Length: 305
Image (tube, rainbow, N blue to C red; front, side, top):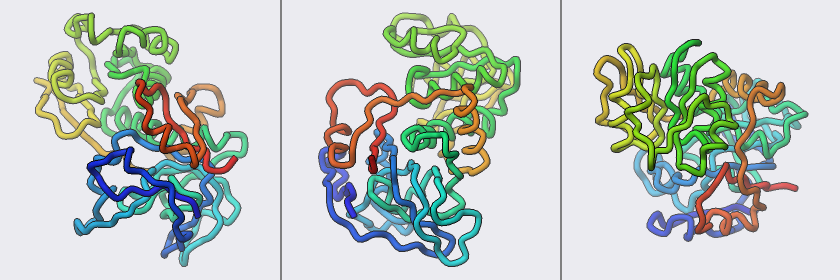
């Protein structure tokens, strides 16, 4: 099968190569999925599991990509809940070969059924951003209707999902970004926009939840805005920023079949829209990942036409 592989961490996306690899075989409780569309997260080549296994042994050449939508072609021993020919989408294990390939072996529990009226490209684009937003807001941030949310990077892939899901849950959303992002942030449903380059963040006032994607100084300044009992939720790694009367929570997204079902249903009924940028073929994906201009929206690799 065709796949994109990496062998040298120092070269980043420039070191990606299109190669031929054997088709994967399903282990116990696995399925093999014929990948129709795959997502790639811009910084995953900096993640240790891309390069080493759980015992810290080198596992290169490895296949990146962890988001997929496709069709089940084989079941491993003991696999239940899915069937051959079923359309699925989900998030693969960080330590296993990924989805920038024609086929991938995935634990069945990491996949959810993809309804027939949802395109594979849309399905793949929902997985990481949708689960990250859902888990940050509801599983970790315990967001309630009537609360306020400061959503950083609200025009981005994750931030746009945070904005939409928070608004739908009944929150008041303040979205941040660059000056050119203003209209996009408002279009995704934010009540207000803050230009991080020109506006004073302190003017926002108190909020119940900050969803942070940046870390560093922005996280520190944001922590001071959180009301008593509120939370700073971040995906930028452990943070020194601590709200005076609240919690600071950093987390790593996990696949969850029930949450994927909730997210895709919102797309089907028009409550949630995706933020897709470039759609590339597998043959052209390396060039798409090495663009020099600022990326807007989720880059999706359409593995099969």
